[in-house]
Amino acid sequence: MQQRLKDKAIIVIGSGTGIGAATVRRLAAEGARVCAADINLPAAQAVAAEIAEAGGDAFAVAIDIADEASVNTAIAAAVERLGGLDGAHINAADLRVIFQDSDALDVDMAVFDRTLTVNLRGHMLCTRAVLPHLLKRGGGSIVYTTSTAADAGEATRPSYAVSKSGLNALMRHVASRWGREGITANCVAPGFVITAEMEAGGQVPKDFLDYAQAHTPSTRLGRSEDIAAMAALLLSEDGRWINGQVCNVSGGSLMR
Image 1 (tube, one colour):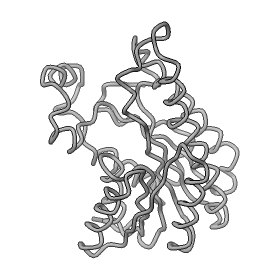
Image 2 (cartoon, one colour):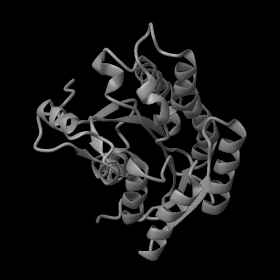
Image 3 (cartoon, one colour):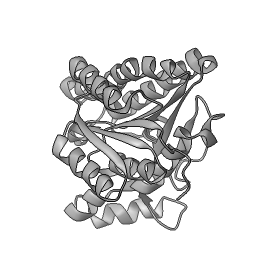
């Protein structure tokens, strides 16, 4: 593994499982010092311990991105431990309500509000917390996890799609406003990704997996490591001239 991120200080927010956990592992493998932040602190601690046992540099902090005080406390703890920040991957989302996200006529507004509170407002809070520390370094990178749902025009999940469309707009604002000060901001938009937790728990029916594969012009469905690889690129010097972009990592399920 190349050491593109050697000694870089990076926080991954939403890193206890899935894409976030895979990103922590990838960044550490490329030499970064990583703070794994998650609302599920034991899960983040387990990921950090795995990295440390392998000789990497990682630690965990608790964060609830729906709560401004929690966000500020977590970022302050990460900065104190790391001595600053060079990058952030903001990856958190509340997926517990996604299956209640029906359509614009029927969706419970509490589901809509909760989705935007975490998936959009929470990302704004994280941006406001990490950005000053990146600017103190003379620049740095923010990577957001969005979704192809923002552009797919689905008949369901309007709350989720609206939140991700708003996140794309937030990312472009950050890139435009602070690009000349050394900040890059980009989104990674995963297609259908099978996480280790989904496989272990049998959460997705086989007929849906077959349907997803049939509608993906690729030999397989996505893996968390596919998204982590793109996040690592965007957080590295190799990605310094990529700014304000939504990078679809979807096996070709969305081509644009």
